[in-house]
Image (cartoon, rainbow, N blue to C red; front, top):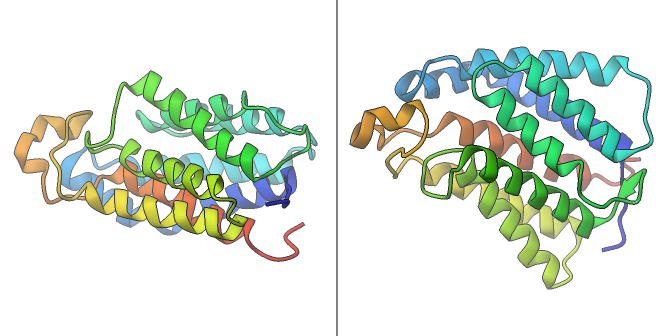
Length: 217
């Protein structure tokens, strides 16, 4: 419960996330070809390239809020389509959550994700079962909150989030899209995994990997 997550670890997390997205560009494109514009993979890959450049080139900041705002603006400008503003909103709202300045504890990290989720829902008006990234992010955040409430370790909290995110992502296969381009397909969207839910899953997958490494600082 006492682990502090620093800007350095947040940077490592987002570099790992960017690499995971780039590795999965073709998979994201394949998913989006079935129910969207076939551009989620290329748009996310382009944005992650910009994010890598920003994270590797900019001077180290010690303030988490400033760091997250920089990430948000990079995603808004670097990721095409609807994903850029949505991911940007997630990190902009996360930046407004209370921090210790240069670090966050587990409760603050959980609140950071909650703020990001709330921002997404206010902007995109999506709820669970709409077949969007919310179907991944909301159950993951709720799993973090539930595990935190029982005073679980960072590893347990993030493992719970990862599992819930994975189940939410897979659940999008079973449901009809009610938001976005996929909603135009109606019942024909059933049977296809949502690409946005998939790219959102990688946020929690890489967080569980990076934040629970021993000696990560």
